[in-house]
Image (tube, helix red, strand yellow):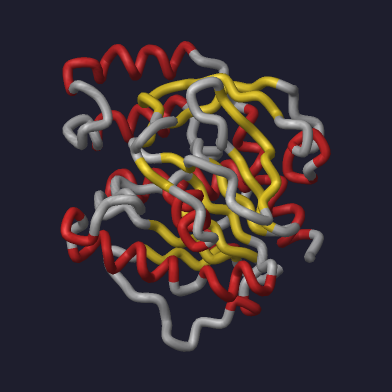
Amino acid sequence: MKPFLILQLRPETEASDNEFEAFLDKGELRKSDVKRVRLDQEQLSAGLALQDYSGVIVGGGPGCVSDAPDEKSPLDQKMEMAVKSLMPEITDADFPFLGCCYGIGILADHLNAKVSKEQYGEEVGPVECTLAPEGRDDPLLEGFPGRLTVFTGHKEALQELPDGCSHLMASEPCPFQMIRYKRNVYATQFHPEADSDVFEVRIRVYRDAGYFAPEDADQLVAACRAAEAGVSGRILKNFVDAYGREGR
């Protein structure tokens, strides 16, 4: 199969490497099956052709799409703009895309939907999600239970469903947990690659990033370890199967 393009926006090496390994694990991918680009360290090739890839997977990161330009570091701006530069072609061509956390904000912003910190932010840890009616019929969620626990933690969120999108999954604190644009462009507010081990790393790396009080870190790790949140990783495997092993 053609490789998957994995774009990462985490400048912290431990968190970036851990996220990358989680994508490989949950997607049942080998390193030879992907092209990894750490956007904090390298730029997208000027001659990059999406058709050379099976699909694009975008990871999370500490940045916020809704922050004003003067609130973003030059690095955050550079990484975000790199992903945004691909969005017109991805959405116009309905090219396979899976944006995780940061990725849903980038997709929604490109589609001119409101992304902000006004409401729907979620604390770090497990949250219960419910499949929306359209989610029950979506190929990436085939065979999923009506309710499942996922890992999340974000300061900003979609305030509305972008035009042209299907609403696939919701949680009580955040209504837009998973969406699909057209047929092949997906995004999740939660982290489908994350399990309790992955989130323990992120809690340690980002304990001073304003997501939670640093003294709560051990309590959050314990809550993640107590949660049964293994189902969401199948989204990555289903994405890989749909667009890689079986083709479009």
